[in-house]
Every structure is written in structure tokens, then in C-alpha cells.
View 1: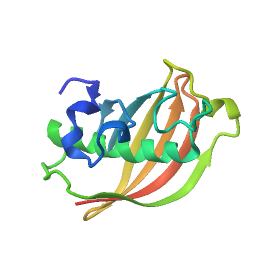
View 2 (view 1 turned 30 degrees about the horizontal axis):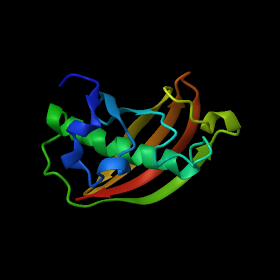
View 3 (view 1 turned 45 degrees about the vertical axis):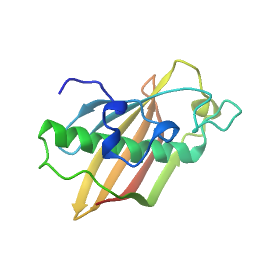
View 4 (view 1 turned 90 degrees about the horizontal axis):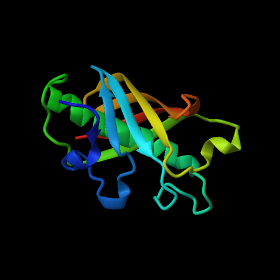
Length: 151
């Protein structure tokens, strides 16, 4: 598998379609995580319409990145091949922390954010994940712990 992988090649693995897909690429994977990339676009659904990223969008980026990273892990043979999930849910968010710098949530066309994901635990269809969103200058903008369900 050659990286980066466009999420348009992975749409069968997640329930999101069209403008509900907010992550553009998977740029790397490991056995228990990886990185996604979001190219900032002021007209995307994660925008608040005033040139800023909605706070909840950072959480969605983490959840979607995890799903697309899992798809790549399965396709690359890093994890045992699983059937494509028919249901996927964000179950819980804890320890959400967002930068106090208001400029960190501004959308600058052509800029990007990197979404770093690490699975800490897997219990059946439930995954516990730690995520970070970093600016193009490698500054942590948001972080959270997620509980995700996929089956």
C-alpha cells in the first residue's frame, strides 16, 4: 500500500458519503494507529460559516481518521482482515482539550491539519482511542479520548 491514500478510495469502509467525509487522506499507519490529513476548505461542513472550524469538528476528524486508518490497516494486512462494518458510532468523548488561541481554529484555504490517532484498547467491537489534531506547523490544536463502536 502506497501512502498517502485518498479517503475516496476507502468509502466502502465507513458509513460517511459525499460532503460528510471530512478527512482527505490517510498519510501513515502503524499497528495501533496512524495519521490522517484534512485540507482546510471554508465551504466544508466542518466550517462555522465565518471562517472558523467548529469545536465539534475536531472530534469528528479524529473519529473519521480512526475509521479510515483501520481500513488501511486491514488492507495492508497489519490487522486481521475484518468485514467492512455496517454500523459505526462515536460512543463517548472524554478529556477534550482545545487550544485557547483563537487563530488555531481559523480556516486558511490551502492549509491543512494532521490528525494523529492511537488505539489504546480494543474490547470486541469497541475501541478506545486517543487523538490529536495538529496544525500544519505541528502545534497541537485539539486532543481527546474517544470510545468508538464498529460492527
